[in-house]
Image (cartoon, rainbow, N blue to C red):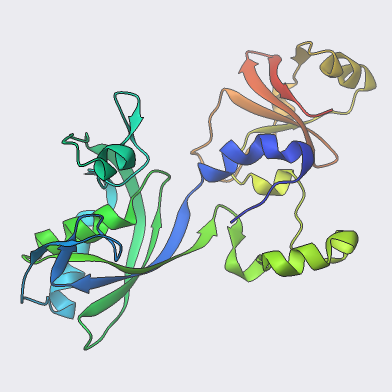
Length: 255
């Protein structure tokens, strides 16, 4: 889980909207009330799908799809969290949500009626819903047996550190490669490097800044928001806001 420090906490909303990667295991034959190990069994089947049948069905779950979130989720229903209504045994319906799946890979199947996958998906994608829907499409039932998030945007387990270790080394954080600059948190941003001192002063007072459009730093991906701009100084994020023609209108300022 990415942890932001100081003023960079204001950038967290832009981090969590990035694509995520998970490794998870589905156990076949039983659907639970929560679509994971915590719930009670509500449906069961003796049919266990073959590896080939699963692979063939995965094609239907790539690209933009619609899925209904689990009943035990944080989605709001008339101002209340769905999981709260679920715990109170109240009846309610959740609307389908459009989500995006970049890639699904079947890693292994074994004799314990389980199959392990790796998936790259958008924000808002529910792995539990995927397990439920994939199983039903295969003519059986299933639920999440284990789940691990391995990547969020540019952050992955390879650069992760245990919280206990982080607390031990907090006095010498600069010596560790687990600490990233604020701009490195954002892999799909439109940015602009400030050079003029007067611009810095005006920005500190919340004033709009004139932008030379030919100096915009564009990300390699085309999925960025063309109206959202981040102002940088030597790679450090100073502000983000709206790009209106040649004018930058700050929304949040970090200086």
